[in-house]
Image (cartoon, rainbow, N blue to C red; front, side):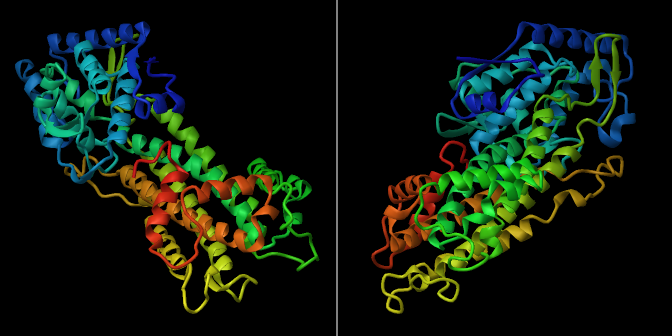
Length: 497
């Protein structure tokens, strides 16, 4: 199958099909027409010698330096070479694929003035499985993701590095092996390739898809913990959540009720105690609020996935080329900070449930769920590991978007730090995955002490899934492997870290 893009309708499902399932990508015929029209405008500007930022001028502080028509191609090549200042470990190949797809979709809108052959080669990278090696660090998030996208663009001219069939090669060698030829950049093309928010947005999209799965898993795991601690179901009564009117909160409560349906471990108000601790009683309120955040993030990502983030923009209706600031990543910076904060809190409440599962002062289970308390430590240190990850998340959740450092001799005097926000959100989500895995291991072990046959229909299925990965704890062992295996199982479809 082939995914058709036009710059306006790219969906999360299509991103999944391209990034994870390897489906091919092509532009619609209407998109190609718009691309050609915008290119004609640029060529006319060059021919007539009009002064246009990034086309016949330098960049940033050099925007007042006029470039002769004969040098506009060299200007673009120098641009991507000089801007390829990325630092640190490379993004995962899935994010590299997402970046190519999102950049191609932005160019398909027809506001960037790129040539057809250049855009075709960009699509060929995706369709041939050539994944540019793109360092994660070095972007300010305005003027877009200049450094990461420059590393992507270098491969198109036969430079930089790329992974092809599992091997790291020079960009030129990767093209040769895929039977592709590098392009020679013409007016505005370098700028069209690197001026945008596709690094932060690609990382954000991948993080979001991972987060969706984790949110669903968190509800199920929390339901099992509720059972293991003989929790009170009354707090999940539909009427309680109806009167607050948050649909996400009500939905989480409904899911919990569904997961524990048929349980003989769930209690009623007043049977054992009148109220549970907040980490149990307030699962719908906290998990529901996290889902509200996710909806905000989804909306912003969907807009940005289909946005023109270039500068300048080419308007074919009247032939105007206008310099603006659509490359500024503030919307995504806020969204990624918001996602990171929300999921840090998902781990926070999960860790508190872990503590209630292992602490003998808070339950009637064997201390630390140990098969031989005292002789064997059981899951004592698993809670330590969860607490460490939660604490790390609190550092990572400090909003990157509140910071700004001027650049380009103060011409670019406010930046978003959106790519930092996206990277931090990704790492938080990785940490959350491990915390939830620890809660699941603890809850499964506790359910065994209670009697698996007494569990609800949904939680019993979850227990069986956990046990297919993590055996029952009969004696102390190295739990690190169990945690890692189960964490991978929680988000098998979208995991990139």
